[in-house]
Image (cartoon, rainbow, N blue to C red; front, side, top):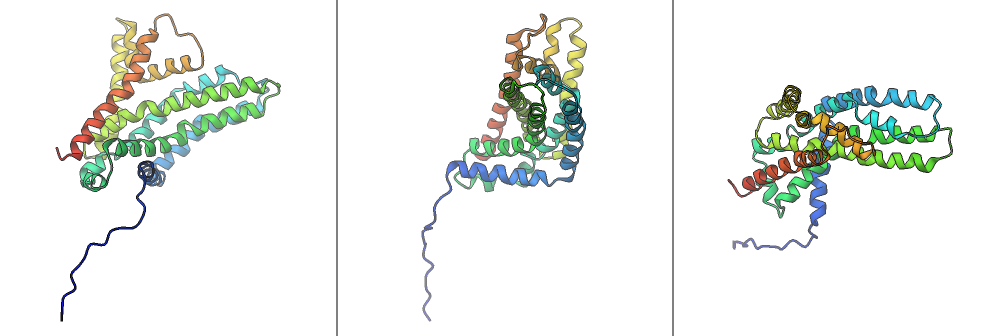
Length: 273
């Protein structure tokens, strides 16, 4: 009996394009996270406390239109900040740490995928998950207040809705690079979650101690940075003791520096270092 040699048969299918690969990573991550009972619990509790009550309150109260002050005050509440931080800690905890623990980088980078594609997919999935709290509810609140207004100036109200979209995106993006960085430094998701939460509060404590000597130390506090950045987005003047240039630099640096470090960390892992 002759042996039939195994011959290579070229694949005749169509390769997924660059954006499809990113979408697959983001979609898988989002579906995985949205099924977590702890994340769902935090989402439900956070939305109920921060958004459901204001929706009933503002829709029942007589109002001419949607004021910038109402939405700015809502976006600047400590409740939203705390729940956002908790969600980022939980969402990002195993974003990269789990791949480190299971050596999944071998599977990711055995395909035709680059470091930036891997990172974009992870950020996209985390953004989609976090936006269910930081993006969708504030926009819904702004739209409902606009829909129940007694005045006729809907153009001005929808202008505030647009500003709220920008403010909500800023809130969503602010902590994600930092959470990803902490996740990339350990292969234990519990360490990453606790680290993200604790480092943020350590910065807040340091800010509270040293701002007695110099008011600029207030901008070390992530809550203060977000608070004042929301003031800028909604068009309000900053207090005289807050340097607008320093605020812009710290806000940008808080996102770009962790993102650059994460990129380097993933790139080194991808090449086996």
